[in-house]
Amino acid sequence: MFFNKNTRYNEHDLESVIKACQDNSPRAQRALIKLFFGYAKTICIKYAASVEEVEEMINDGFLKVFNNLNKYDHAQPFKAWLRTIMVNTAIDYYRKWQKYNNQDSLDNIEALDVSEDVIGKIAAEEILKLVQQLPPSYRMVFTLYVVEGYNHREIAELLGIREGTSKSNLQDARKKLQALIKNNYPHLYIVYGQKNLKIHEN
Image (tube, rainbow, N blue to C red):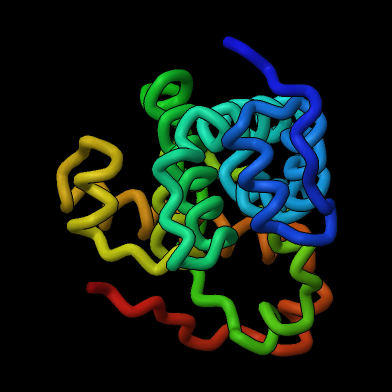
């Protein structure tokens, strides 16, 4: 691939950076990564269980960005386009490495309904750490459903599973996550008690 190292761009002008990336400027590509690395990380970290997985997803995601940048429609926000690529990259990673690595017994986990007040008292970063402890299949469905807003039919199509499996994985993810909340934040659980926490099913 030919790299035009002399392509000019303004790092404060996203359109010029994108144009330079389309001209295969390595400096512009590094500039684009710098601009959106943090944003990409906030997306990928929700699907990963380790720093290594996050890094791999981000690297693969930006590679897809540069390989498909000529297909980017400038009429849509770049961040929305980037988000779609990063989510799809996380799904590809899951399907390649983790789809069948999802065994986690729930037999000894008590079915709980955790108060929304408890959820509200836990920092988003701490919630993320708990979500990362979920088995891959639960974490993937939970994130796609709760964070990204996909319905079960869409999730089933994305992951190549049955719609019923998506619903079951979400229920098991909630059960596991609620147990983790009780185990990690017993003081909050005692203060606010048990209430009904429902997630709307599509």
